[in-house]
Length: 276
Image (tube, rainbow, N blue to C red):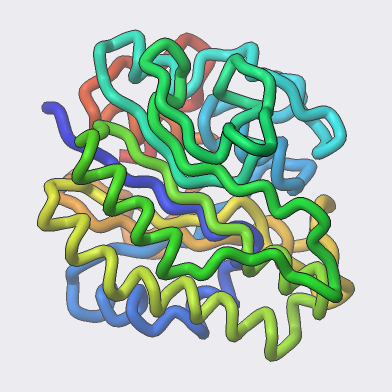
């Protein structure tokens, strides 16, 4: 078995916000075109640690990245490195934290946003920096523009693993809170863009997973143990048949082995078991 996989990480989009606002994704579930489960994140429920957990199948205390202030090159086997070692092609449209984690090169603010290097774990990428984002400037790339860049990379390089990481819901959550109209609207904006992109990506031969790194509370925060911080959605569009039962709570630590398994790549020792 060897499938191509797209992983979409809706940064900061918690479970309840996604189920209530993502009409396209939920409609696909109702029609049987996709499956959806609740997923529980590792902790601390912060972006950088969760990016690495999603890609390594390890708890932050194991892979060592436990804070956004501790970002560095990944030192653990991960989806990108294992896929590349197996002769697969990798690509990403993602915020610059992913450059720090999976591209063994200095970040050049004027050049690194466009990346092509077969010798790095992420081989093809469009990175964005969000430099200076805050209440006066959200610095949020349009969701449909991110999906367009994904499609360009998919058609130009035919990667076996392609990551989309969108940060806008997290940005609006930090700015207005996880119980705000602005946050909920942005979660819907992701869904609205995916409604136009997912059919195209499926036609290009991809299985698609849509999830989040963490949620967001009303106080504009995440990182702790609250359910609203740790409960996220996990949607699957694909042909796998041995799926978890409806209502099963999944662990975020199973994503790495699942993605690798769908590509026909063996997971690393220490990675948590695949979800299916």
